Picture 1: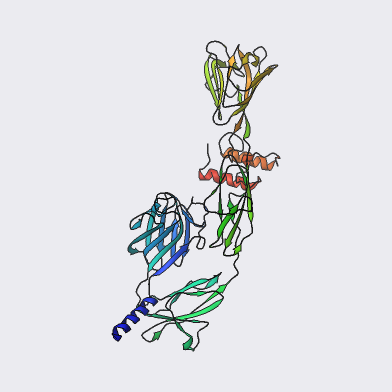
Picture 2: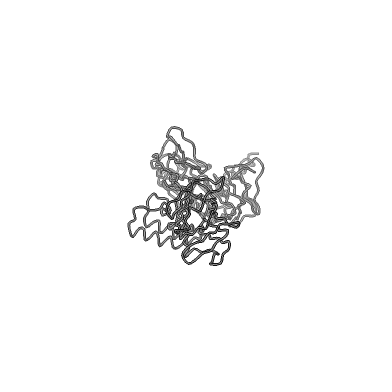
Length: 494
């Protein structure tokens, strides 16, 4: 019986010294580069690398974008298991069931997904929709080594805050590990047998060696240096800026393990988890916290922009649409505004709009409401021959050779009492804000780059809000760079 117990004890000692290694990625502690899941991101820890074609690894929790591909690779041994702990549970938003791939499974009610299969250097998973992850544990199958090698500290020294868990491993089969606080010396009574992780709470140096069959390995010495905890202030994306209809604000903190809080009044604070929707003028305050240590409070202000007022001028010398000198119905489209004439002609320098059974004059605007219509008329055929039909909103006034409609409507029609001729028709609209549309031609193109550079070179006092391409609150050369990047990336909207 004593012999059986002795063999069992030896086996337990061997298992405690040599075992599979876990590499644990914790959101906010091991981080990548991105704050939004819209581009490639990567993070690395203890020889294990995780990449995602559309990931955000600088956030807490991590974000894996829908439709992306994730690869987990190891240079320190084959991967035998991966555990992914998500924000949501199975069938919930951001849950583990958004991942899929050979060897991967998750179960109803759980927020943990597991890949397990034949040990491999790399594991690949796909994302059906976005998943948010707090922790990824990668289990590495350490190779069996027969020759005696030194043990390995995890982590292998460096700075830390608070309390640090330290583990020791040795790939040598049946090796035992001993460690000592301080530099190595000959006082063997002070060496401790390593059987479980230990914790460091202040600056200390440790030395360890491995032993097998009466042999000992080389010494390994590491130092763990405790530093005072500091917490970086959160970063707003986007920073303070103006917006048109709706904005989503995200927060991130560079300090590992920090929890972010936000407030609208600096009295009631909420933990930041999801992007904050902004639909009206708003100032958001934020701070980050690790333990009892807090960052400074920072803020960002978001201002809802008024509509951009733009004049769309139909000039008969250049804007002819499908009209010509033959009398017929014609349509002219310019930007978001359409002018329809039911019976008329377009001469070299003026529009002719006839009355009668086929007469019609209508202006429509796609999305942007019409605020004003101004007719530059010709004597003898002035816009005084126009009037508003019953039910048409707004007011219409005439004077001299001109006529003006004012109101708010997406469609404005007129009754043609007698022939009207005019050189130009100017339609004023409250168009939608579009960052980068500096010249107000309802698209973002290289022409806007030229317009923006000209504004900067002439030190224009009244910069259009669309010129603030990067939403910094000021217009400068960085907006030119941002606009060029939009064009190069192909994300400009027509």
